[in-house]
Image (cartoon, rainbow, N blue to C red; front, side):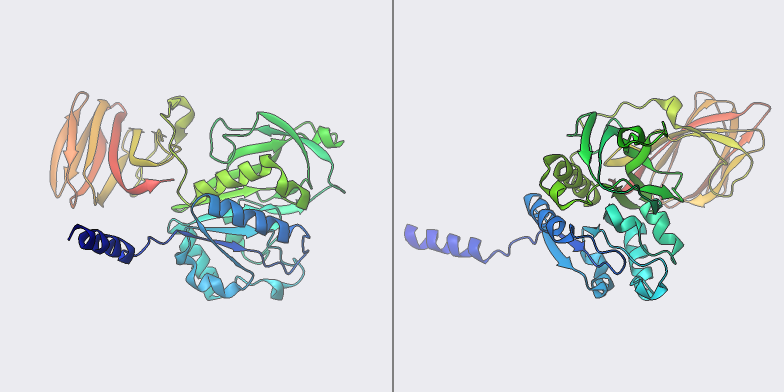
Length: 362
């Protein structure tokens, strides 16, 4: 009897379907300059994906983007097009819409080296990557690479400085919202310029996560643990699998920006976007100052929200009910309400705002 029960339990366990691993697309189409490192890099990326419990899907067929939403992350492996031939571009028509929906809806992209040398007839593509390839000096000299951020999965295991040979891109049309991760010293390759040059960065595009690195030109580098660690960490981040740090300590002064109040841009103000760069966060926490006459306009909320007044006077409205508030008061607002707050009196209104997010930000 016991044996029959054991056999039945084993059979039941075997019948439970395995949970499918998240898929990552390794896309390597090149219709401009074709890098001879692509096969080596794709093989290395396959190994990196499997080591992370991801299922790699390798393709150079643009039709895969018809189902872009199937992927936890998309890796663009030196995916060049010819800047002189618009017909060399494969993101056209509905496939442009598919990629844009994927990224802005929360997808992750890892762009390698010559992915910046692509789709010159699509401005959004350059915005997504963070910039466009401009030029590079001849050869693949060894340069000094410098970390330019304290933390990011793509650089956490890298030394502060290291030297590596590669092809060193210069860029144009760089976005202003990039989080610089690595730079290189142009003087280390014989240039006269003393200013560090961008090499790797990350940024948000809508709800999506986009990482770019200029490294990866040489096939020999795809056996270098530093490049593998760099790209592997980026893949973790793009796929939303990066481990959160023990804590994040934020210098609030560095988060201060002059910014019109949201929901109508009524008047002027200042925002301290305190949690914007906290990885994996599930809530938003900000401080705002509304100058005289400014207001956060009426808007519906789909979560509970808290306003804590730090200084000044104001009026909070929720579903048509208005209440005067001042320093030392806190307002709890409920999901489903239409809410707003306006400055009143002679002094600016300063408040903190906190609310949960629909999904963790990676």
